[in-house]
Image 1 (tube, rainbow, N blue to C red):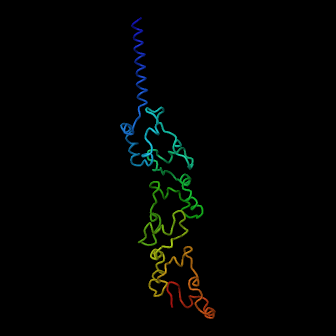
Image 2 (image 1 turned 135 degrees about the horizontal axis):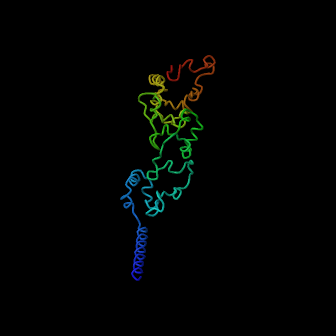
Image 3 (image 1 turned 180 degrees about the horizontal axis):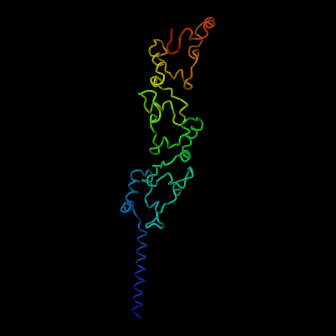
Length: 258
């Protein structure tokens, strides 16, 4: 009887000590360097593509406690992330892998999820309908999030010398049919489409060849200004009664006759 008592007491003490040891082990703070001993892929992803998940948080900040209280202990993203409400998918990880959060999955045809964040682009597409409006966002942005494709993958360039930067000077991807250009646009870029006009202008001996194309065609693409916008009314009224159009004497603006 006495032996059984001491045996039970020994078992109880052992269990108590084991429990205490487990509790102490559970409370030990772990560093990221401890996590990589078992989990090699996730830390590698974070090191390469973790963005702020690499620098602003530790493994333990998200996966609170070890061993985890539940299997695959994945926290709610809203623990840290607030602000703009994104498109309602099954969850944040429908787009964002938490270990490489800026590497967004681009599977299937995606438009509504993209435009829930990119509202400026949505406004441009809605206000300027074109063939681009009919495409899913990831038709163009297919490689990975944030990558802008080369226009010439789909579109024939206006000339062999054109670069991606040249395309973007006049055409904005989300409003491509609305051609706009800065005041600094060089004549040589206009020549990529309007070669005949450019050649005539460069061969002409008069002052128009020293004027930037965008100085005359300034408001929007294909705008044709009035000669009087720059020249006023240089001749007596009687001359214009007989020759009402400037071109009756001076030919076209790109190939002037004095």
